[in-house]
Length: 174
Image (tube, rainbow, N blue to C red; front, side, top):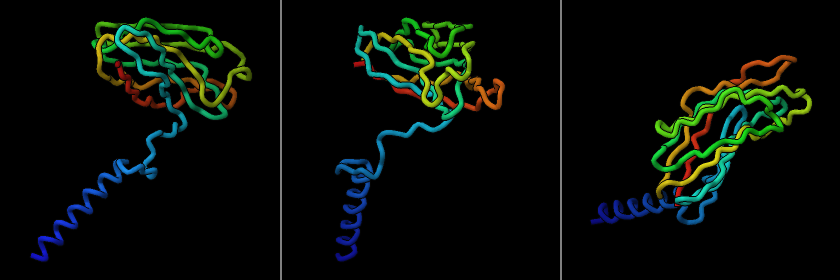
């Protein structure tokens, strides 16, 4: 009988430990907000509703070196949201070389570059482009990278390709 009671107590302790690790008891050990690393493209924005338009900003993070160009392909679920358009951050990029939105296959391609003087371009967290989305049905979906992003940075007096990654972003439609 004692081994059965001991096993039951251990089981309860494991269940409480798992619940604590999942944050059910106000746990502050596990961080809900991830810190954005260097050489990362990520998105900031709000959730949207069915029939409502919202904006999501595509951002880049690189301290002390400006981003001078990018060629990005993003993939989304066209049954959940409709991409109405995009707005290039003209404070940093003055040439929109290519932009296409394929609503049928859920692909966005954006290619832009900057002709501005490098000293006038901000470093750190930079807004690259704003995506305008309209919710089509309730649910959620992920915006991910369709291929490896090509990002140009200005380092050591010349434009070179930076090694960037794209963080997936969840969009919720209420």
